[in-house]
Image 1 (cartoon, rainbow, N blue to C red):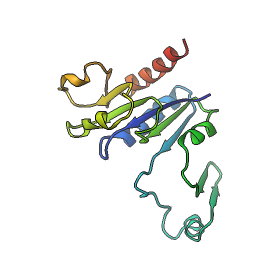
Image 2 (tube, rainbow, N blue to C red):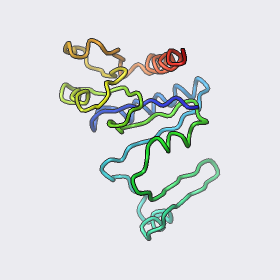
Image 3 (cartoon, rainbow, N blue to C red):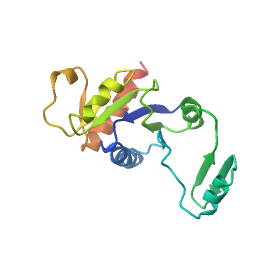
Image 4 (spheres, rainbow, N blue to C red):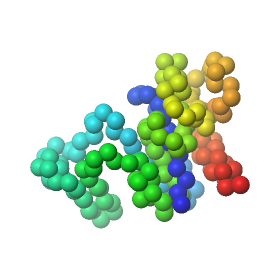
Amino acid sequence: MAHCIGFTGYSGSGKTTLIAKLVIEMKRRGKQIAVLKHDAHGHYKEASGADSTIFAQSGAEAVVTISTDSIHVYEKKCKPDLQEQINAYAHMDYVFVEGFKREKHPKIAVFRTIEQSEIIQALEHEPIAIATDMEALDSRFSTLPKLDLNDIVALADFVERYFKAEQF
């Protein structure tokens, strides 16, 4: 069963960059990773004019593009469920989730500014840690482990330790 951990924060906070670097580090450690990204505003689009885009725009319920080294799946679904997607990748070592701040999986809050730190209050469940490059933090963050947003090795170590501790 894959270990699922989320990275949540506002736009521009560094979530995507952090996850991309963390994937590289975890792959270096021999881990298999799946990444699920929340597109809350419906901005994701296939490249204009691509066959898969044309099929999706024509109303196909699902479009699967198969290449020599990957599969891209587009599937229309009424109220897609995050847990169902996490379960689909249970064979991986880790599932990294970007966004989905209202879901129950463990999360690391990501922010670079005081304004972005408000993500903590927007979460329904307290994050397991924060990842930031801010030097000074106010006392409301003192109970949470603080991870350096730019120290990917330490972030990967934290993720591995977190799930090892969860097993006992």
